[in-house]
Image (cartoon, rainbow over all chains, first blue to last red):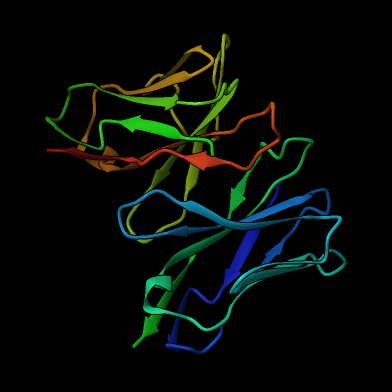
Length: 113
Length: 116
């Protein structure tokens, strides 16, 4: 089955700096890659996603890149703010509707003021 | 956007009792809902896939007789933790997807279960 690895497990950056979180997946059939942000005790919230027919997607300060050949995708957050502090999970899924989600272990991001 | 409601948000129960958690899709129909368990500082672990009108599909290592899932309608799935024990204490989160719109996975608020 699919296996998703995520690095780093913890990341601290100064406010205003950029943060990059990387994930790798094992199953080349995976075709949908969402990123979720989870604040303590709350539900995971989708922040950005990318499909396998696209190499990069950007939404304001957040961007995701996908390398299908290498089977890895990355989350980029620019101009980080304290409210970006949370746990971020990547996921990979396959199938027409992306039902079989496999989540990475998560990255705890701390943005220091 | 798609909203998933989960109740209760917190529950404390005694060892040996059963607890039911509800997951509702409020503005869309979900033929499939997913139940996850999350231990502190860990990732989301899929427990089972709940299918409307049929039996749930459980992940390896998840006891189907202990974690009863019922998906009786297109907007409601329930997870019942039977004969709960302290080791069942965890954060349980449901999720659903609007298959009609091919949309991303949306999560409920989660249920913090504490078994004393």
